[in-house]
Length: 213
Ligand SMILES: O=C(O)C(=O)C[C@H](O)[C@H](O)COP(=O)(O)O
Image (tube, rainbow, N blue to C red; front, side, top):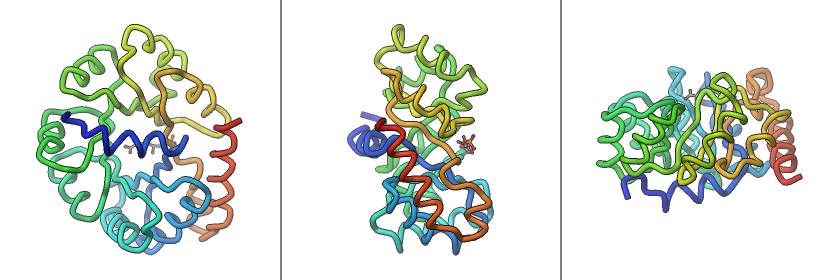
């Protein structure tokens, strides 16, 4: 299958929340990945939205074997390849383009592409993608929107991301077509800047506990 779901699905089902990280200093990558893994969230998405992002992926992938490092905000085939070369084990994009689908087909590393509307979702499914990111989740219509898709588009499952917090994660995770959620709330900038890895580990632990409640 084009999506390589055998690699992607275990990552998505392995934890309720995938931390979405914007890492300004590559040196933060290893302690941050370690703290999140220790708190129960080994899979993390490091977004290519900072200059240090590729280095952050490289360092975390090399130094934190207990973590599963993914790359996010992938917008081009070039970024796809750079992220994989740096050690990313899954690739996340806010949308779905032919260029990314071609890059994914040529790679062993699976892609979680984004889609919102029924037509976008159906087009992705026609390409063999039944696991999708739903972004920006809250802004696009939130859990109510996703719930409405669950019966007509029952074969597709999502990782909603964007505007998800400790307060609303459960409303998504209770839906039949949601596997996990993505979010930055488990690693707030202030705590990363302060190097407060213990507090981040605790936020991860709370996110896991809340999902199971
Ligand atoms: O860059 C991407 O590809 C994204 O996925 C954007 C993310 O959705 C947000 O950075 C996380 O959203 P918040 O949890 O609302 O902060």
